[in-house]
Structure formats: C-alpha cells, structure tokens
Image 1 (cartoon, rainbow, N blue to C red):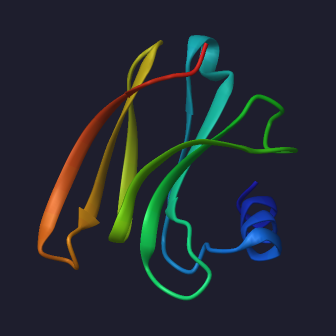
Image 2: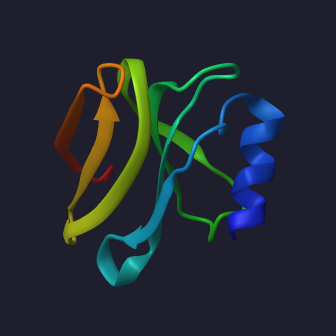
Amino acid sequence: MWRLTQALLRADAGGTCEGSTIAAGPKGGTLVFSTPFHDTKRANMTVMTSNTAGKSWDVWQNIDPGPSAYSALVALSESSVGLVYESKGYGAITFRTLALPA
C-alpha cells in the first residue's frame, strides 16, 4: 500500500514529506492518509481517504495551507480520527479532530 500511495502523490504533486496512513471507520473500511501536499515545499497539510483499499484516493480536507510537516493519525472512534502535525514553520504542534466522511 505504501508504494501505491507514494506513486499517487508523485503523479499529482506533493508527498515530499513523511505522512501517516491508518485504517479507520466501521471495521477499518476507510484508509486515511495525511501529508503536506505541495510539489516543492512542506506546506498544505492535506488528508485523503480511500474506500477502495488504496486503489483510488479522494482529497478529503485541506487542513492547513501554511507550512506543515510530519504528521500522525489515530482512530478516535468509528466516526472520527485525530491528526497531529508540525505547523507554523516547525514552531507549533497542532492537533485536530476530524469527523470521517459519511
């Protein structure tokens, strides 16, 4: 799955920094991926989802258009995930709770 995700990001733009991938939702049926999604710098923290076991991905939310870097995801419940990431030019650590798409 990691190679498929990397290939997807290189084809579109971004993926130049570590990201996080988890299985979430009922029975882990939704893959969730976070990364700074920019073609030349660590910026534009974005979260994507896949309901096709990674065969296709949809941009779910653009979280932070500014500088952003390493991220980690955690399933909080069947309907939400937590995202923690470096923000503000490495000057802060930001945590967000995100409701999974229906």
